[in-house]
Length: 465
Image 1 (spheres, rainbow, N blue to C red):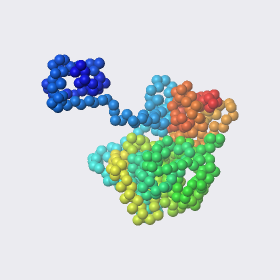
Image 2: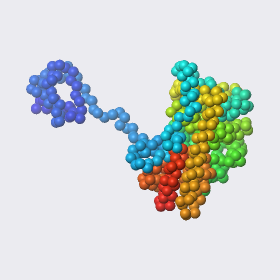
Image 3: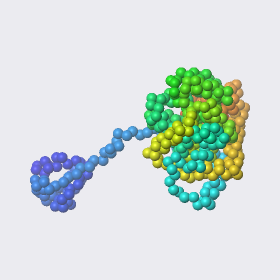
Image 4: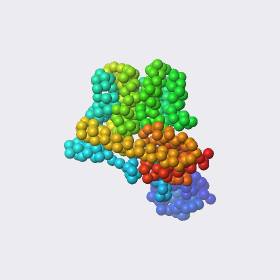
């Protein structure tokens, strides 16, 4: 009975016991019904317990992270994971916005390969960059965005800091808003790129939405957009897609951009552009930057996040920039100092490889011309696929539905107008993977697959409510 009382606090096999005295080591066993001593062990245990010479440590297998729930899968990147798990021979991944060749293979631009060879020949090192990034890249990216002869650049009113592609650059801009514009709200288009809201949520910047997409016309709800921007509190940051709106592919006309600028200027709002597709939408760097240049030409102070994932295919290099166009060189200098201050505890300094690729291409006339030609080729392939998809759907669908919205959209995406149930049918029945809002990436479509996709869209639209 005495031995029973000694073990009353010893746990069963779900825990482990450590005894730090050699007198009783080897004289106990941990079985399925708990701890067992032999007779010698019990006597030694009693003596040690009374003399205070025993140390017992009980460790359970409960993690301190038990309270952390499982995160939901990313709505875009999760599409690729599901696609990889599908064993169908006809499967098609139209979820992720990454350019593919006609054979549906990833494409590394020839001009990128040449720029990398140039870097090898020069024997460039891998030393840390300054917090603001590579100076040659920052100069090149601001000039690509605004034009080398832009007065804002000549007057040194542009603060440019290299960021971690578009996402990281947006995040830096959001951090600037949170710290120096307390209480300010960001107005975001409905719908928008899936990560925009995450970025501002994590930066603790409140946001609301303005109308953008009209499901009745599968086009731009311009009147609703203007009304919502007008009704926003003065000084609101308005997040605008510079070109090739994601996910809709619907852009304002040049005349509509003028009216948008009128309202934002009238309400003293702050335009914040996300430019992820410059040169990749129309095939022209200048045409795709026209919206940003319009606002800057009016003397407005503007934030612009840039990315080189799409137009140079540098998806994994994470190269981009945040630009703040200010009204004076003095304020631009102060803003840049604070952007650097924000970047330092976030990631210290940006990666060099992608920045050097951009700087080498833009800084070498022959490479720059080759890049523009390759951009036109990529944009042209997407336009050709867009036309072929429209032709296939129009010839197959005898319902009289107008599918011309496909041709009115621009860039790598098409907003099909399919709802979640219809999008699920595209995946479950046809093995076509896409985001649940009805967006498809035409960059992942080949001419050979256009008829198959057309059949799937027609079936899903007409036969799934």
